[in-house]
Structures are given as structure tokens and as C-alpha cells.
Length: 166
Image 1 (cartoon, rainbow, N blue to C red):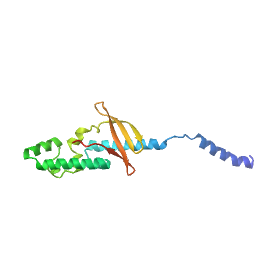
Image 2 (image 1 turned 180 degrees about the vertical axis):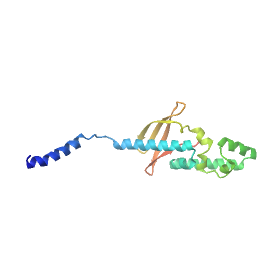
Image 3 (image 1 turned 90 degrees about the vertical axis):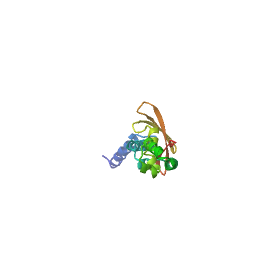
Image 4 (image 1 turned 30 degrees about the vertical axis):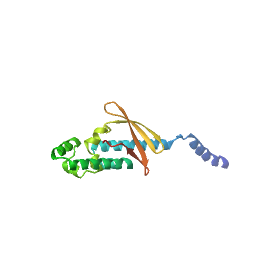
């Protein structure tokens, strides 16, 4: 081999390797979809565990504020209720008297009222549609109904944006 050939062979291999690599036109889109799917499955796991602390952390700031308002309204109504009404509220919400007397957003997110509205715990993720800092997740409920959940990007993380049941 000549000196020039010895220098060109490694260069040819390098160029061939670069030219043969698979190019993904939108690697960021795939990673964003993965991040949205992870946010959904994390939310789903917290719903299944009825973990108000984790659920609260997975909500966007607007949903957190809405949960605080819903909790305060329930707490106020519970405080004004008669003993019989208090018992009914405890049973309907699945919370103890102590939990209702000190109700906050995280406690509200453990209630039957919140969990009765959303059937996410046993659902199956189908797809995510991402447009900028907003994503729509389509999921299939256990009963076969297709539903959608909105996520928004806040502080670099995907957060669930969900209305609180009244």
C-alpha cells in the first residue's frame, strides 16, 4: 500500500460509517412523546394508589389552584354541616372527619369525588399529540371508552391539566 492509500482507507471507512447511519428526522418529537407518555403513566400510577401528594405534584399550576379551591369549598361546607350531614359527606367523599376538617388540595385528590370523575387508573395509553407546550393524550378506559387528557409543559416538565369535579 502506498502512503496516500494508507491515509485514505481510514477516511473512507469514516465517511462510509457516517453516510450509513440511520437519520431520524425528528428525534425530539419521539423523546417528547416519551416524556408525555411517562407523565401520563406516572399520573395513572398515582391515581391507582390514590396518592394525593404525588397527584398534586403532577398537576399544572392552574389545576393545583383549582384543587385548592375545591378543597376549601368542601372544608367550609363540612364545617357548617350538621352532625348527620357530616357523616353523609364523610361517606360520600371516602374521607374521615379529621381529613375533612383539615382538607387541603392533596386530601381532595384522594377523595371519591375526584377519583369518581376520572377512570384513568386502569386505562391504556393510546397516543399523544404534541403541539408546542401542549399535549393531548388519548387513552382507552377499562370499559372501552376513548378519552382525552391534556398536559402542558411547565418548568420543563409535562404536567396534567385537569378540571376538578365540583
